[in-house]
Image (tube, rainbow, N blue to C red; front, side, top):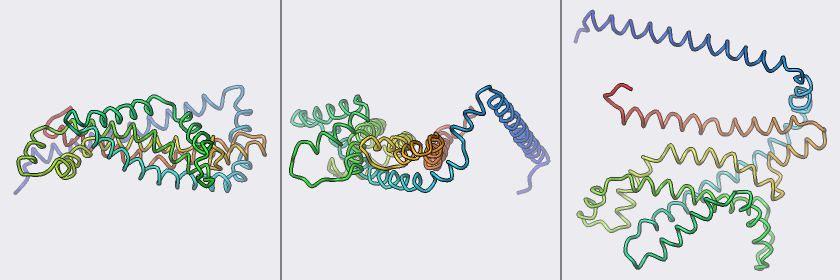
Length: 280
């Protein structure tokens, strides 16, 4: 079908407006960055801060050990993510059980989520990392990263299970009633009907929790695990310079950026789908 001249004019106008917006955004970004750089480098203590936190030689010498430590963080993160996914799914499913006979189960799960959402992660790390081995249960000596992974799973499962439960509550009851009317059991209704819709609704929130866990995985250093943070601490003590901490921070940012961008993309995609046909 031939496009009218009026529609072609509209498309050309939109292209000009889009190009104009990109140019203005680029110029303003460069100007703001230049102003921020001038403001920082003009401060009286800039040379001292540059030497203490941005020393190139210290950056290069600390790189191998800090990167090796970051690999430990990545391994712990992957195992903890799988553990959190399993435990939080089970917890959220238990919260959906109905009937007075399941009240103790619901109360136990509620107490668990309230306890670990209220307790700081670093305290959970100390309790699990030093308290559990001290019970003398006869289990062999395990590395610090193992206990750190357990503490992460315990804490983040409480948060993630509540996010999933919110997604389950957001699914319209008619979906569940329709599934039960077709003869599906409670478990099959959850697995085949409710969970897929619930996870789609809360995916951005779950991704945000994953980003938060990527940062908190660095706290396992308090148990003595030589991760990126602990390696940076060792290098800082050796060189009497804080640059290794900056290096570790940058590596954590690089580790989190793909997930952050994916979260933003999913949020925008969900927003476009929900606002389709409207202009906001």
